[in-house]
Amino acid sequence: MANLLDQLKEMTVVVADTGDIEAIKKYTPRDATTNPSLITAAAQMPQYQDIVDDTLKAARESLGDDAPASEVVSLAFDRLAVSFGLKILDIIPGRVSTEVDARLSYDTEATIAKGRDLIAQYEAAGVDRNRILIKIAATWEGIQAAAVLEKEGIHCNLTLLFGLHQAIACAENGITLISPFVGRILDWYKADTGRDSYESHEDPGVLSVTAVYEYYKKFGYKTEVMGASFRNMGEITELAGVDLLTISPKLLEELQNAEGTLERKLSPEISANSDIEKISMDKDTFDKMHAENRMAQEKLNEGIDGFAKALETLEELLADRLASLESVKA
Image 1 (tube, rainbow, N blue to C red):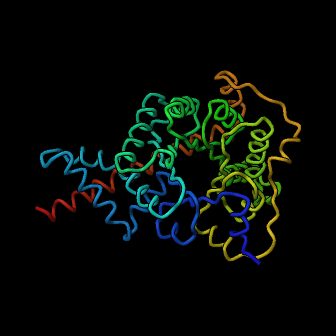
Image 2: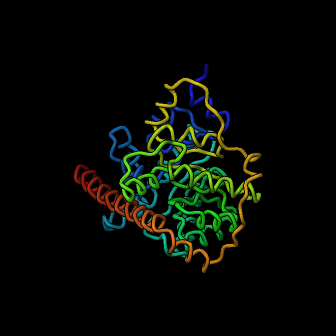
Image 3: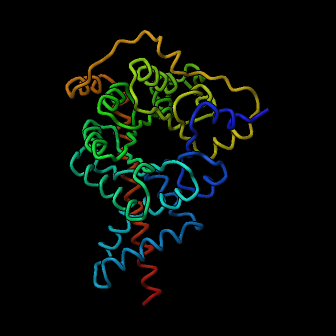
């Protein structure tokens, strides 16, 4: 009998949620996603020191010997996620998601500019833009930025998505893909209710992603749903059949080692018969629904803050490494 991972791949596109290139090679996903925390973690692994060093050296070469170290670090910082993305694209057949600086999450114009810059870097390296997803936080401002990029043929992945209002806004703006979070929603409900655990079929994160998937399929939206942020294998198996699932190496290993029959839980055919009312989404409706959803408010803010802190850590890491490299050179 095939293991659960192989069975899952028959009904859902499996994506590796990591910047660890060796882990991606091991589990052969179609796509891969990265975020600031994952890139920062990978940048500190000894086996990827060459990627960091080469990016810093190329930034110094671009700016010249007289450029301040701060400018070199800033340029390397802008290029590092793409450096990892290029390595990942060498070993997967599909797409990689590369994230816009989380500190721009409420700035539409800056997000558009950063998305264009990331695509330009990939295209300069010979990569077709259809293999890249620009990852943007699902604020109203981020969604508007993504809508502009999509019209330019730049595909986007809207992340930190915790509420149906975010999902509807993305679909109505023609976004390629969304990443609704499962585990972080579970974390919030456990803390808020004091419950120690939820069965997988009643997991609030699972129910949230299921509602988004059913809404999209009921009303014929083309935006892909990629469940993300898992705490256990049960959350994944309860979403079997969703368009995509992005899964950490630890849980990919658990699925690979698990045997049994995997039941498909989600399908367009089942969702088409769902009793759902359509909601028209404008900014006022978005803001009203967001204000009424305490969990989405808190987790979106927390997620943006967490990614921003990871980026600050990465900037410090790059500054320290540049100083080390240039002291040796001197």
